Image 1 (cartoon, rainbow, N blue to C red):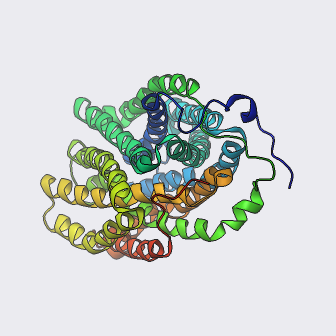
Image 2: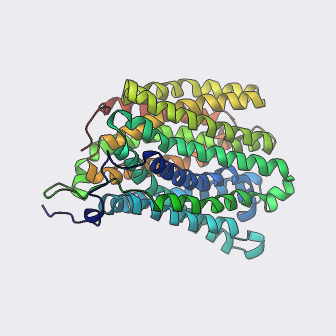
Image 3: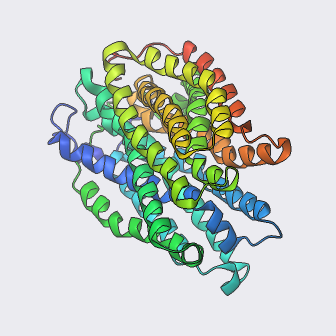
Length: 433
């Protein structure tokens, strides 16, 4: 077997999982970068209505929205490529350079979205640029989750890997919370005409202003990965050897992804289907972010105490059972309180299960392909199911005339994910290979 030589040989002899310090700072660097990347990506979902009108004018508002959420899905097309390329780069060159690369890519994509003139100003060039920006953002996020999650579990004490890696999903909740807060501020302080004309761009500009902070923090991180020892297996043959774990993990990711992206769609759903005012609807986004932040950290802590499988499984079963009643109650009683309550319940169950899942998957993979394997499972799962969720639920509502139709999709995919979880072995306490 050919020995893999890496730039890590010269710079990681002093940076073991037990000596990476201070841990608080490197966790903050991981969380800040991950949160900002997801903030920029999901902000698009929250402003899909306005982006559709700006870049994709159509004969009817529904057609414009469908084109907008379809382009939201375009951002998922490049995720598998990002997962494969950047995940493999992280396993070869290290977690730190891979995470710096993803920050650079997300900056390019967000800059384009923030500054591109609308269709009325530059015609067909506008939607073309938006599609390209979404592809770049997808490439970045496809390659972000694997390296950052691998980094978190590699620097953590063995008995606290769940608590550390729980910050991966928690940072996504933080991104949703901040994006929702920014959206709420924009829709509250500006008139509807101002929001539609230029106000929806402000949250993207805000994200650009914060990206240099994440770059600074990540540049000062210590590397967590060592070069493989002589004779240690690595590369694509080892990835192929882990195909069963990666395949089952993809189904686990599916359940969390559909539930999560239905949650992020709640603002658009509340505006277009339930006819809520934009400012009221943004409250659902803030709720999803806050509950995901808390639920992910809770899920990580519980998984350290009770094991990964139980914490993955029971909340996922709960999601399958409560999704339809929650949406039915919301449709029957479309009040702000019911919107927030139904959103909170689904977000909490999704966050607890999803946090344990994103911890268990890399624990089951060898070190030499940990970032690549998780990146493939996550990016493919999110691409196939997350990238199509908003389009599917919008089309389901339009074709069936049933505003509660998204719940059936959530319930079905959660049930399938629960079956997949039963196949995975328990990974708590397992020595990282």
